[in-house]
Image 1 (cartoon, helix red, strand yellow):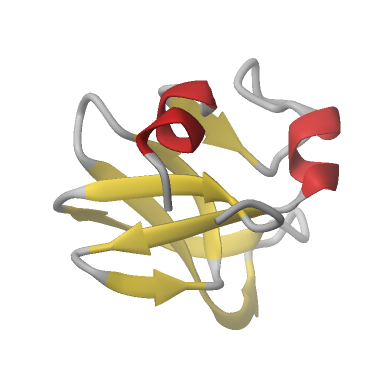
Image 2 (cartoon, one colour; image 1 turned 45 degrees about the vertical axis):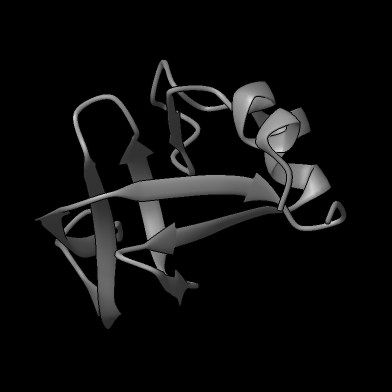
Length: 84
């Protein structure tokens, strides 16, 4: 992963279309997240500057059909999957 790929990524990104941090074009290109050095595939939202990720809890959903999530803190490294 190059530093240029990390710098091109937004500070905060969400997979929820109702969020102001949702970016369909970027998500369509394929975003990968490393959290505490491990690849995570169930990230619903992240914030690099605040150092947290919101992870989906399996297939559990709330009463509105949205995934239940847990917020964890630590170093976050977003990147585009097609690069590097």
